[in-house]
Image (cartoon, rainbow, N blue to C red; front, side):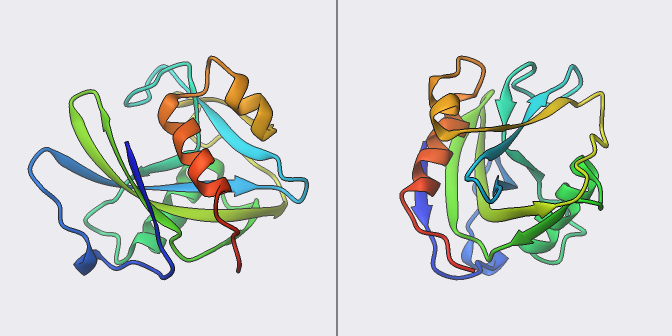
Length: 159
């Protein structure tokens, strides 16, 4: 796994995708108390079934930007009633999952309130706010998720 911090909104022209690489987006969401939002992967999730990860997904050909992709993923996964301020991209993470090399564009989100709704109950078994310490001690949070959270925590996020 590798994480590279960014200081600007990254564009598709800055990313080189090699064979057997998928491009995705992930958002690290915290509330005003510093609790981190994770989702439990459901039976029909692509991978990591039964484990906890941050919200994200594959960038689609119809997405005009990475930010548009993460906004779409949020709507698909938690609906439109949650109020989340979204930063520009804050990093890039490379990770190998099930023989696929993933390049994820990372965003930071601040949960301001509103209803979190499970929009894909076959792919998500629950949404949980957890402390950093609970996440790092948990056996059901993926190694990639822990790696990402550690790297996000090293940087101060400014809107």
